[in-house]
Each structure stands twice: as structure tokens, then as C-alpha cells.
Image 1 (cartoon, one colour):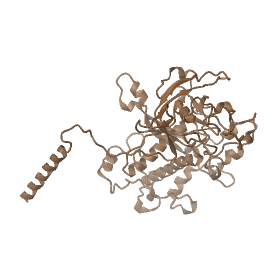
Image 2 (tube, one colour):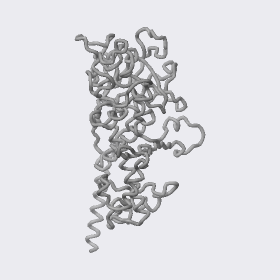
Image 3 (cartoon, helix red, strand yellow):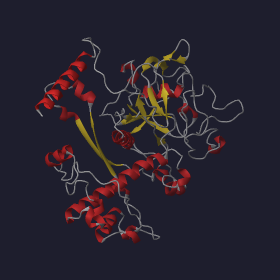
Image 4 (cartoon, helix red, strand yellow):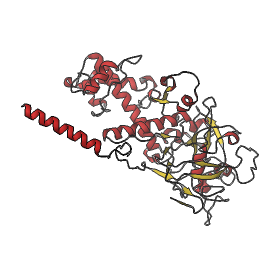
Length: 460
């Protein structure tokens, strides 16, 4: 036995020596896991480069808030289309299901039900009986879960059991009690339809204000810059009525967001804060999958900066009026190139009355659809008439948390042609939702080797 132990010790020493000598004592750098860039689903790569930002023509409305300046942006991915109703419903459904599972797990914990008991116990927290927990999960459960105001913070809900929506199949009264709490009161229902109370669909997320941390003076801790947001995320469908006085738009109010007929149309009725919440959820959702496959975490999804949006909208065309060039809004066959309000209000002239599918019309040279018209789009930047004068020329971004006026770009189905110009700036308040404002997201590109060569007009 002693000889065996000695032999194992010798092998371990030799193995350690081999590992140390593999680099021959040279500075070869620390090696991590192999990494391969992955193009996000539904996105296209916008190669970094420089362009002339602002109005190259006379500003005939005399706003004078977009003087020309040369700026440079880094490479990034951008959604090919505006976020659609179907894509945003994936977000609201995830939040809805998470709330249902959380409520079921909490009640199961309160009444002492476990998976072995059946019924609501099937939805108990995964750690309900502290069985089959890894040492790490056990440590976290003992030291961190349930600390603070939220007694159930950190507890893992069970996503492996299907939620039962049919009232005839509810497993027990506890389950019925939870589900009943999610719907509007019976006295508020009509025509036999009792729907979920969408005001309860709230999404909570945290983020670190890196810019504030970098500029902070004095001694502060990291936790001082961790921000928490919690907000209702269901679109405001009443915008279709409130945005237009003396106008019949009830069909859009009733059907536009939830009906399958409009799944591929851009989501509207989402304010700036909800758009940012969607970005946080999309990052969380993708990284949960990455973690399950033991893959590296991805960069966060976010709203584009104003310069990024204009650079992408131009599609590589310098000083063009529209994403397709211009200066006209029609092609050589006399067809309109975007969905807007042409000919003094003839909405039907461009083959659309309200919005159209998110991939309608021809894309620009970067493969992006509807960068002009259809719906205006939220960007991350705050609106200030003079921001071009003091913003940086490298990745310019002006986002003042105290300025609630947020930039919207691209014009919409209800706007005249001026707002479709890639250089035109407009704004709306961050907490406002409109029937003509949507958004699309971007993600930073990892690395710097994809850059637009302005001399030859290609990417290298």
C-alpha cells in the first residue's frame, strides 16, 4: 500500500512539472476557453466606421438641432426589424408564467405542500425539501435566500411543470386560489370573458450604473451603483384611442397586440422604460440558456444610441436623405418606399392604413427593414437641441437620467415625409406610450476587426 501511495505521489509531481514546462518558461498568456462569435438570431452585423451625422440639406423647418459633424461608431448587431407583437408577447408571457409559478410555490411553501403531495405541491420551490441540492446551492440556501424584505429572494421556481390554464383541470383549491388572484375581479368581467389583470404583470431587474460609478467622486462602494427597476410591462393598448380624438380606432385597441393576425407587426404602446426592460429580459433569457449549455455569457441587449441608429439607418450611404438614398420617397416604378402619411393625408397611397408587417418594403444596404416609416423607434439617448455640439465624436451618446425627453427616430405611419429622413430628430417623454412608437435592440460586437473601409466601401 505504501508503495502504491508513493507511486501516485511521484506521478502527481511529474504531471505538475509537465504542466509547468508546457510553456517552456515563456510568457504565452493565460488561455481561456475557445470562443467563437455567434450572430444573434434575427440580427445583422453593422460594421463600425465613420460617417457624417446630421442634416446635409437645408433644415427647412428651422429646428436646427442636427448640425453636421463627423462621428465614429464601433461595430454592433442590430435587429433586422422592429420588435414585433409576437416577440414582445414572448416577454409578457414569460413574466406572466414566472409570476404564476412564484405564487404557486409560495402558497405551497406556506401550506407545507411538496412535490410528493401532488396538487399545488408540484409547483413547490426546487429547494422545498432540500433534497438533491449541490453543495453550492445548499450554501446559498442557508446563507442568502430569504434575506431582506423579500422572504423568497433567490428561491428557484420549478419551470419543469406545465401551468394548467383550464379551470376544469385545476388540481386542488390552493391552485384555484392562486389563479383566481391573477384575473380581474368577477364584477369587472363582461360577455363571459374574465381576463388576466395585466397591471400585475411586473418585471423586476437590476443593473449597474457603470457611467455613474466611473465618474463618482469620494469613497463609494459598488452596491451604491446597483439599481433596481420594477415596472408593469404590458403594452398600453388604449393608445389607439387616446392618440386620436374623434377617430374610430377600437378594432386596433381590441385586437392589435394579442391577435395572431398582427403577430408580425411592430409592437406599439410601449414606453421607453418598458423597452429597456425588454432588453434586460432578453439578455437574462439568453444567458439562462447559455448557462444551461455551459457556454460563455453574451453581451447585453440594449437600445441603440442616437448615432448608432442614424449610422445603421443610412446603410453606408453618405449624406443620403432616406435609408434608400433619396431625395424622393418613391422608386422608379412610382411606388412608395415606406409606410408614412403621403400626399397630404392619403394614408392608403403607400398600401397601408396603420402599421405594416415589420419586414415590409425593401431593406436598406445593411439589411434593416423599416428604418424609415412604419413606427418611430426609441433610442437610448436623451433629447437636447444642442447635444451635437458637446457630444463626443467617438461613439457619441448623450443620456441624461434627469432628462425625461428621449429621442425617437425614423418617423411612423402617421408622420409626413420630413420625419422619415435619417437625420431628423424627434422626442417623446420616457413614461409615454404611443400608437406610433416601437423599438429595436442592438448588441455590442465582441472585437474590433469588423470595420467599414470608407475608401473602398467594403468591410474587412
